[in-house]
Image (tube, rainbow, N blue to C red; front, side):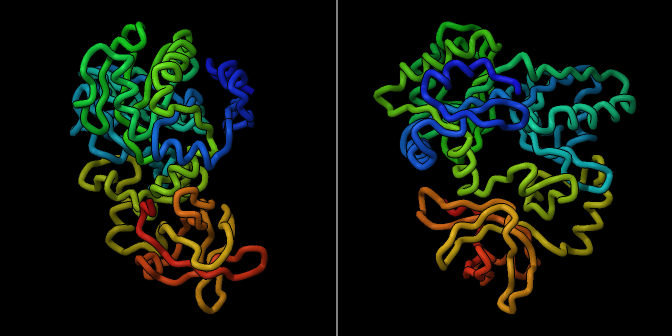
Length: 360
């Protein structure tokens, strides 16, 4: 198992470590619910250094990314970040990712930890179609700290000399942070709260982590683990690769049409154009349990006749709502807000209703 540069910090803070995507990662410190609510109310720190970092450069880098991602890369400019997907020839999702335009003809891609090798291989097979494109996997060289919560702007500002609270959503810049030069910060995150992500060389990660904890004591800053990261993202309806999306689900089925620009030519776009024209057979929806029970990944979703019509892709007990919530694929007519469905939990059909995400 790999360890991030912050492993010793987690151990010192009493984190419970678990295997995740080939890394030993903190799943919780004081508890998932407490960490979740602290992010919603104050500010939490997450180590997400297990994520992959690819750098794409060359005069044809933009055209290359336009072809391999579903969003419109031409809308990017230096300092802007874009959420997108990598698609395969069948229109399925190879991964969801962030595309950072660092400079003219230079980009950074942030991909899911479990997909680093797969994504890099997928991208490599298309580089030969473009003249000047260099692809570099620097995943082992970078640490990423997510600072999330309503008090995160104040915390970040305390460690940065220049004003940064005017930064717009999904933008980035390089700053001097905690006395370290050329740290990349971006207004991104996976919690639905105001948030930042900090990218730095591994050797600086521990210093920045400690500086954040020290500077934010009066703001209620606390570390948070993967458990809270999962419940936070689920309340906001954010997809988790491997659960809610995969190589066999399309962006349209997953409700990601807003990052799927069918007017551009990218891998698998013809399949998606046909799917949009012919209509979906199933789509991802959110739901809440109206009976009693906690939905979990893989539980069957049923209609009122007891027929299985889908399965839960993600489910949990919402710390904010104190009720079971989840997501799953169902026929389009049942994906409408307020439709009655049932979740099979321990051989019982528990009533639920579909919801438009986010639920919080």
